[in-house]
Length: 138
Image 1: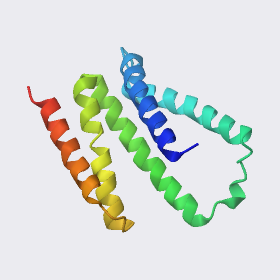
Image 2: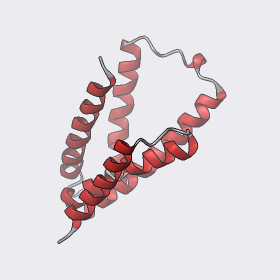
Image 3: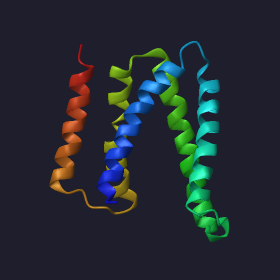
């Protein structure tokens, strides 16, 4: 399957995540909600890895472990902040701000991975920022 289809599915699931997370947080402490979410994810992803026969952790280098560990810490920080924000504010405000991660990812990729920012990507980033600002204007 083409990577673009996977990306669209990712966006679909991210949208569903916002809705499900907001409902799941009702009357529940954010940290408990995250712990439950992570527990479900842990079981799910190990099941997927086993089903696809991709469980040989010996293939991971120390560098892989380090970067994946750093990614996990960043993900945990993102989820913690996202759940706290969802607990206190509406999806219509939290989700657009969260989507600024696209712009940050593009900038970080350019700085650290030397990925080129094409004119279309640059314009898209500006439009995303403008869209977030317009969405948040009351």
